[in-house]
Image (cartoon, rainbow, N blue to C red; front, top):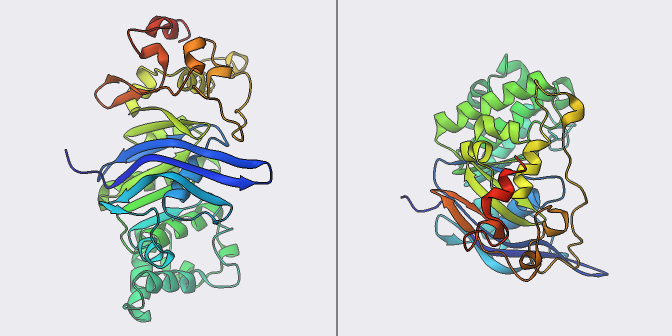
Length: 339
C-alpha cells in the first residue's frame, strides 16, 4: 500500500474558555492515501470542520490550541510549524472549498480579479497577470461555467449560488493542490444545483487525481462522490469504512442512528427515527464512549474508560465495545436487532 498523504495521530484540540478547556477534538487518528475521497460525516457540532481546520492551522490561537497529537502531510509534520511555512502549504498543496460562496468572494472586486490574485499568490508571484488570467479562464471552463469570459468580468452578486460555488472550486483547484477539503460545499444550493456540483466534483477528483475530504452531515451526499466514510461524534471518529460497508453493514449504534434518520422514497415521513438526547458537554467529556448516554445498548463497560477500535473487515473499524472481546455486551446481535 502507498504511504498516506495525510496522517493524523492522536490529535487533541481544546478551546480555552472562561469555564475551562472545551475539548473539541478528542484523540482522532486517521490516514488518507493519495487518490482517496473520504467523507467526514456527523451531526452539526461533532467537530468535522474543526478537525480539518485544526490540522492546517486555520483556527485562531488563542483560544484554540492543540493539546497533543501529530498531523503529517506527505511525511512533513504540521503541528508546531511556523505560520509562514503553513501559508506556503495552504492553497498550493492543500485547498479548501467552503459552504457559503458569497461569504468567501469579495463583493467589491470582479470574479476575474479575485481569481488572478489567488493564482498569483499561490505561485508566490512567479506567474504574471496575463498567464494567471489564462489559467483562470481555463479553470472556469473546466468547472463548466458558461461563457467564462463574461463571468470573469462579473461581480459575485451577478452570479447565481451555483455559479459562485463553481468559481470557488476553480479558485481552489487552480494551483493543482494535492489535497482538497470541501466543507459542505452544497449546503446553500437547491437540490438540482447540488446534484450538478456533486457530479462536477466527482469528475474533477477523477480527472485531476485529487485526494479529497468532503465534510457533510448528509450520508446521501457523501455516497455520491466518496469511496470511504469516517463517522464523527463529539470530536471523535467512531466508525471508518468503505462507503458500501457503511450502508450495507453499519456497525456503530451512532452510524445506524444516522442511517435510520435518512428519508426514504418508499417510507412514510413519520417512520423516520431520531436519536434521543444531545451531544455531551465537552467542557467535561465522558470518560468512556461519548455516545454512551444516548446509546440503547450501553453498559457499565462503555463508561469505564476509552473505547479502542475493533477491526471488523478489511478497511472497516468501529470504536464500540459491542465488537470487542467476542461481544461483551451482546455482540453484533444486539446491533442487528436495531437494523
